[in-house]
Length: 174
Image (tube, rainbow, N blue to C red; front, side, top):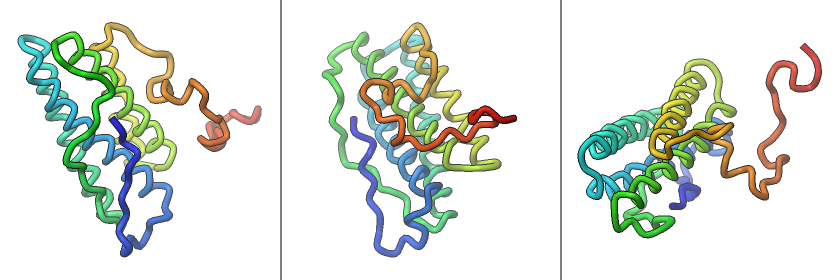
């Protein structure tokens, strides 16, 4: 499912803001996750069905919060697509579980970018959302990844495309 389609209006006053761009990307990813959980939820029952409904509700809440944030930053929230192409067919429960893990991995990537682009309370919220996605992904997958949110960037990714590392001590100083 593509989550990289971000539509901007001509009247976006802060369209070049890295923070607004990251918020819009996370919002697009949340739209895709809400759609994806709508598809996979009908193929799960019992405990997995309950977990899928809880994740769906969490993504809807995050989506709504990100739409408010986009407006607060002077942008027009990116709209949801009418439908999204799934990365693979989801005919049964095991495929639905795989899709849930993929959705959470993609959401984690969007929130990793948002953590990098924000400060203060918004960064804390983005880090919390990244953590929640990583935990859900690990539950669906039955195991975790070393760096949640960065997995899809590992294969063939250009490190320069993600920008400099700005963590304390990353340049060898403290």
